[in-house]
Length: 124
Picture 1 (cartoon, rainbow, N blue to C red):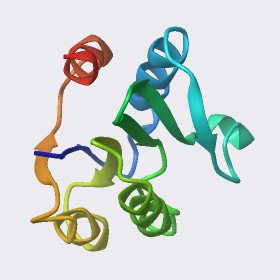
Picture 2: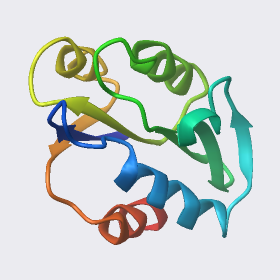
Picture 3: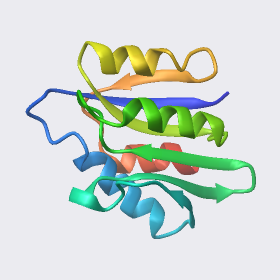
Picture 4: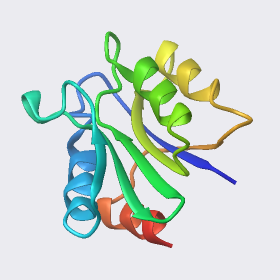
């Protein structure tokens, strides 16, 4: 089953910090299949990594209001990503966007999780 991990954050939390670390660690070992406009601007990342044949990971570091989350989730789904990492606020429209990925993705909302834990999930 395809999975989506959404880091729930507050408006004052730098929502992409954990996901940027995940991206950097995965990028050191796996090729980037595709990156989308906005990657690298202000250290934001929207990218797909190819971990192995038929297994792609989509990562979106923006997840607050007025972010590109809706577009990124749609792109990741269209590109058949097996795993998606994104962030969202603790409630509201961004949570609803993530929930709309069900039933195609098993959605898991997480709050305090380390980049190492997410990287382990990505490569297992």
